[in-house]
Structure formats: structure tokens, C-alpha cells
Image (cartoon, rainbow, N blue to C red):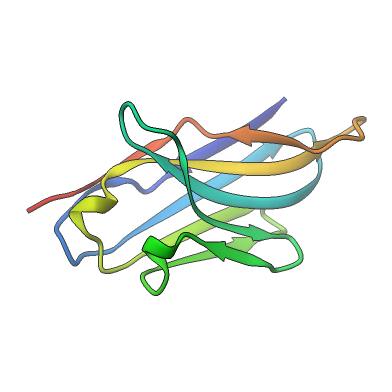
Length: 121
């Protein structure tokens, strides 16, 4: 079994900052990539940022220069530092991991339960 547990969401004023954290646990053999997606009610989930274990990073254009993704591979954690937050960053943010479970030989995607980020004055 694999679990992804997010923390760090909340309410913040425009221009403020938040840091999201996500910890992966369970019978994990290896992790290929971890990242963050976000979703508004009634809309599709969209990429925010991903980082492979090799270090390749991908950001959505809307967050470039404001958000920073980082990982602690040894701890199986991924972080998202969000600065200069805007009301349009209000979403539920989901942690994602592409990984191989012990005794399996296929990469699968797993999701956390989501954490709400609300940017409002």
C-alpha cells in the first residue's frame, strides 16, 4: 500500500506565501517523479510543478517565477514553496508520485487526498 499525505494548505492574503509538503510512504521500491497538481470544482486537474528523481523540473507557465518545487529523495518528500500568491491560485492542491512498488515492475501514479489553498483578503 502507498500513501501520500499533504500538509500546509490554508488561507493567505494576496501577495503572501505558503509552503506545501507531501510525504510518501508504504511499500515503495523507487520513485521516478513527484509533483503538484491543482483542481477547481467542476474543472480538470492541472499541472503545477513536477520534479523527477534525476532533477528535471517542469512548471506551469502561470506559476513560473513564483512557485518553487523541491524534493528530499531520502525522505520521499516533495515541497512546493508558493510566493506572491494571487486569488487565482485558489484551488485544491494534490500531491502526485510516479513510483514502482516493491515486487512490481511497472510505474504507477498515486495521489494524495488534497489540501485547500485559498488566497483572499
